[in-house]
Image (cartoon, rainbow over all chains, first blue to last red; front, top):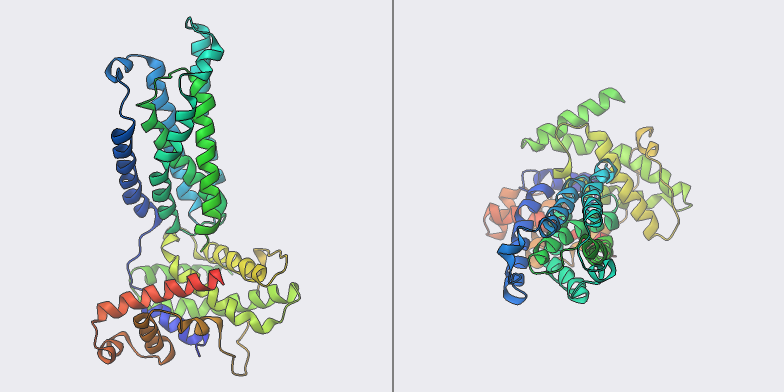
Length: 213
Length: 181
């Protein structure tokens, strides 16, 4: 028999127990997840053979800018979403940054088109590998992001899970970009986006259960 | 309401600074407001209001386990009502009704006293038995027998630190059980 008075006294007795807010859990879990995914990339796919040379190609570099911009935009939205009284609307516009950067890349490439037809650039060399690798590399990161958000109290668990998916897939896509030999923004806009969407859906599906409190 | 909200915020700040007595007072102060909102929610969805105490306890547990998500610089009441609203919707939904809960249900509520008659065993109490042995023993001692952490440690012949860990984990596990049932 436990009445509310006694429950309150019990909760008061537990008052000093140290707990970590989501920001601090994320600060630990996401770097760990990133290290695991990086190790996974290096152990399986590896960097592309001409990695150092490729860094001189602005479209290669743009892949990192866009994917990291996505991850960085998702972070404050995730923190917002971890609070019970806030919907993450206030920072959603940040997601326009990676989208605009990618759009600028497409325009820049169209302005001085390489000798390869656009459709060939879009299809790339290995779209399927991209579609499979980014979600696979995102799994440790998604777990990390969800662990961080579980320390919170999100008002919309599925939405918070989706944002965790964006954060995870942004970082995973940046890792995969180091292996991927397709640099055309058209390729990135198609296949990277599809992979990110996949991880985001997975995050929403897991979040709708795991992020309830 | 202004004065009440400020008082709650001040109490929660003290609680986070380690003042358990302030925390106790805060939980006591918010409970009648939560109870009235729970009753109103139950009544509106055509369910017996005698289940309100389960919902109140469910909300208090969530508030406790998630209090680190409250931002010290923000007022406490909106945060509290967001948690309460979420748990109330969950609780009513579990009882199988389509529900609409308005945030004003909390803000404009007149506090209710608990039902005068002895309450039936609540959901939380029912889940105590299914906890791992140490968590169950610690919660039994503190929550049911109203023993202190110190005397519980002496009685179970474990350290006070171990009692604190078992207490916190037991509460978190109870919250998990309430969620999944």
